Amino acid sequence: MEKEGFIMHPTRGLLVSLLAAAVAAVLAAATARADVSQTPNATGCPSGYVLLNVVALEASGPYPDHVFGGTDRAGNDDGLVCGHAQPVAVQDVYCRQGIEVQCELEQLGLPRYLVKEDDSPASLNGPTVDDEDY
Image (tube, rainbow, N blue to C red; front, side, top):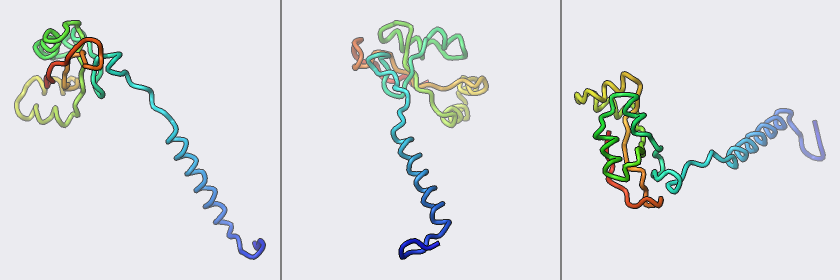
């Protein structure tokens, strides 16, 4: 096909169409927004942590009271803590080191958490306590 001084190849039109569709898809994905996560003002938890109920956690598996309950009692003692689930690989390392409760958690499909009190400085509850690792 010839059009005013240049030859148009049939595959060129297909390539241009595919490229335009790909650019449109990238732009649509770039403007899409994820759900807004809870802020420290709402939960008292730092970014990446979720608000956890101490009683429910301890009832769900072999989580020792001194980790979740102790962290909560050292803070605002409201029955809630912030937890950040760690990758299974981290749990595997602790299990291989002979920490039995980590092996139990892994067998039950329960996560290992980094735990903080739910009183982020961004919330109105006051200062945070140090991380408890479990």
